[in-house]
Length: 289
Ligand code: FAD
Image 1 (cartoon, rainbow, N blue to C red):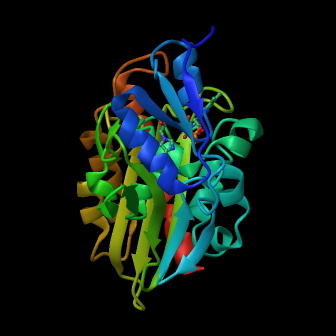
Image 2: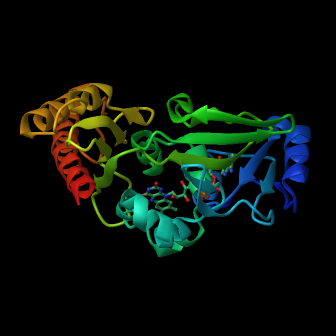
């Protein structure tokens, strides 16, 4: 399969890229790792007239702790996140997730910004960012704005990034207290998109009471989904067996999976229930260790 013909620019500054995107409007698409966009172009699901490649722009790839946030530059590759000591120290959830994403070739090139900006509920990072209460920095010619993750995904392949804008940074708050996080998805075979996936973060106070919980679900709703009732079932408890059971039941009831080649609706709800229990338990163990 061959994509339709297109023009190509590789600006060397963010400003140049923003100017180009503003001139070209909806004729242009941003190219990051290309591992979602290029397959869509080959299938002719996307036919941009112009690609604006971000790969030559310095300063968009980093993982650092600053101002009580883990900050991830949009062009950071999966593999860089996987190998970051900040991730190993604070957010083991990324280690859980990255090893389940595709294969090393995709992880060597696919970017975290691209994974979110693609706006696909089947991608894994959206659910993680929901569980971790991330914020997304979006840059336009007028300056930068910050969007909370709950306002970022608003339709099928639609996000808060508008024509002429670039997602530049993802910020994840470092929780106060003891915390742990975990992710798992079931997949038909290694490297497949999720049949269903669950991301969890649990924050505990000194008495072991849950002060905050984040639960994000992958590929069981048209958009990445926050399991709100499940989160509420955990807050204020010691995350005992009853609270975990309730949270898991709510997640399976509140998701909206569709029947497809990966399984029917009932099967996917059961997957979500089992994974929610397991990921809460794993996040709790990590918070307590
Ligand atoms: P691109 O493909 O370059 O771009 C994707 C979209 O986002 C485009 O519309 C582009 O214009 C836009 N975009 C990119 N960067 C920005 C930015 N900074 N600002 C604004 N818009 C931007 N992903 C998973 O999560 N889980 C999987 O299991 C998985 N399996 C895969 C298996 C295969 C075989 C392949 C090819 C891909 C798979 N992926 C999976 C997708 C992969 O993780 C992609 O790399 C990722 O979704 C997109 O990142 P990218 O950098 O490649 O973005």
